[in-house]
Length: 261
Image 1 (cartoon, helix red, strand yellow):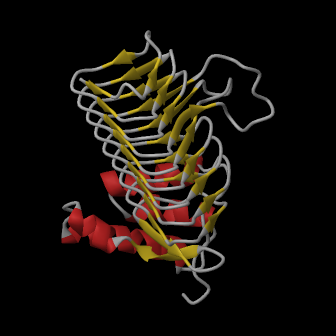
Image 2 (cartoon, helix red, strand yellow):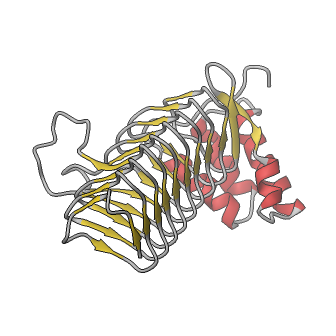
């Protein structure tokens, strides 16, 4: 273990094997850090933080800060960070409130500089959150989503798998899976073909996803009628079922289609 004598580490914090802790780091009592992590100078890791293996927390980042929520009454809550996740400079991740009890960031995520993940968010695996993106409370972001820099996401919003959101977007509606989202105000701009290709989706899978979204967005149907058409016209599949389940369970409503279509 390589712990700088200039770091402030509570003696009861649980630090794994082969962890490098640089000067001027602060680590509080109720903290667990897994093996092979690197904590860079001036990072602050507060009570209730649990960090997995092979993670990096860069300078100025604050993990486990109390929620920016006036309903928070000091209850014991936490932040859970998965394995192989990187938290860059001055990013902030707040712990949960009584609503859910914890904020979760999964494995193999990249939380870029100056971004914020608020209380009770669930960020799943292999998510990228761009520089200065601001994620409000109780947002859910599913696997492989990319939230580009400067994006603002309203509380309780859901972002599904394999989504790509244009930088600077203001997101107040749920974003269904496999989609490319952009413009101002945001609209559906197609499917995230580049991301899907990189992750091994076949031509048949890509064509199916495109066709389902044509039914949803370009046939002049309301969501209820579009759901019925998708259920009757397409055989059950992982892709079809994920899209249908997401739309059916959306409470905020999904992003609208482009007016150009």
